[in-house]
Image 1 (cartoon, rainbow, N blue to C red):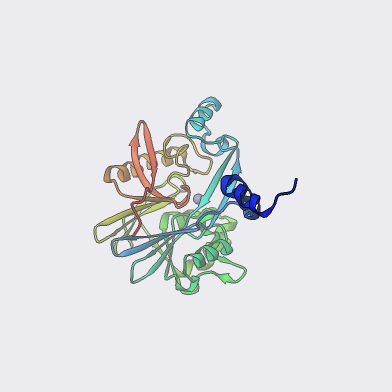
Image 2 (image 1 turned 90 degrees about the horizontal axis):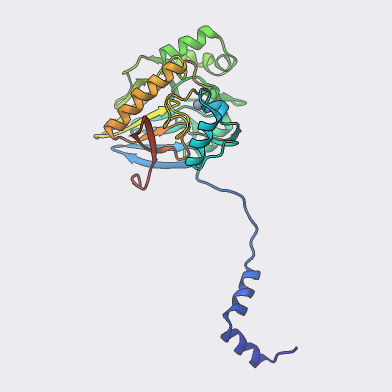
Length: 304
Ligand SMILES: [Zn+2]
């Protein structure tokens, strides 16, 4: 069949399908893979807070990590109720930068040097700008970015960590500690619970995950925020079920007690929180719910 020009025009006017079919074919674009933001910045009083996605990776068999002391059936039921796979779980590693106006303070350093420097760069920071590095505890995914092929990552930083945590690993011996932490010991300040890193930033004991694991309470001009680090490592399996035993918790009973105490405090005070392993951007609220807690991700409350 041949169509003259006039008939073609009539057809395309009368049948939008012809026109749109042509458009779809011409607009075909390559798929580009999953994408997501790697930093999230907001104001807290006079401070500026930025969460950094320094790494993310899937891990198989989450029950062996998060549900060691419960039945397979219960783990499957809770997971299904929360739209979670029991085959694989996505892990997030989220250091936090706090700009107090006087100091740029980095909480934890991710898995490795490339991860933390890449995340800092995307957020607009150079490692040399970091004045203070705070370590919540000394697992590899928190100390890994302290140094790398190019030596210490943060040329101008002082370091702050808990005395109990440092003393534990110094005595226990550990490859990661020897490689990453001990070489910086001379530039470290050691904190007890309830002591200040800087004005408005105070350590909170949350022992159990490791012997000296600490969170940090941040307050500026009346606005508050809690960094709870690895107190709870999953929003459902751990935060909603504080007594489920977690493979990474050194003292499982003490970790559960700390979860109930510190998460209880965050929920009672109704202040926002950042959890190092919460799904990125790792910012939200904690509510008391049933026998545990609910993680309530941010819903537009931090747009300035
Ligand atoms: Zn961790």
